Image 1 (cartoon, rainbow, N blue to C red):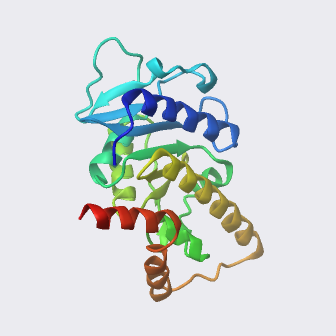
Image 2 (cartoon, helix red, strand yellow):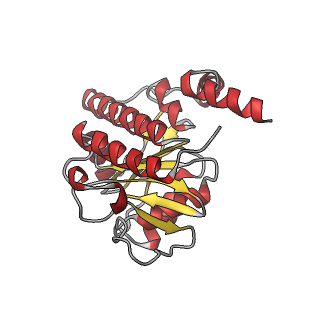
Length: 226
């Protein structure tokens, strides 16, 4: 499959960020969006409203963290985007949001257990919450790499959520699902103890998800390439 052009990717990043903001996932200038490109990534700039962002404002950062001259400053969170791509060479896009219920759970340092089978969309039997570290630091980037090594989404303590995918659309879709699950789990905690599905059931769910929706399409494409 032919890869989108750089211009198309820059436009897609802006469209994803606008959707993220307008859907309530990350109000104002909070959150950030990136995708792989060549030997690095393209990422939203720091301190600029998404409504005012143009394709030329999107910043290219090399995989070793260099920002070529003549560009804006990248998002202050660029380090954990890069660490996520290093940890997950099979993923090509990442969305970071401060969505309300995911952030509430993150501030309570609560991972999301398998209270519902849809938790499996993140790639396992939970959605972990990685430890707190100051935003924009290498320490936080290291925590994120661990959190996403075997999951497509995680919470960051006292911060928000991250979702990654094989495309920007996939990553945004997962971020929306994580927020829905977070709201459901939060409301469940108000009622009392959650009844968590066991590992055997979640393993069965994982197998079913391989033939479910977008994953089925991805698996078919991988089979054709093989």
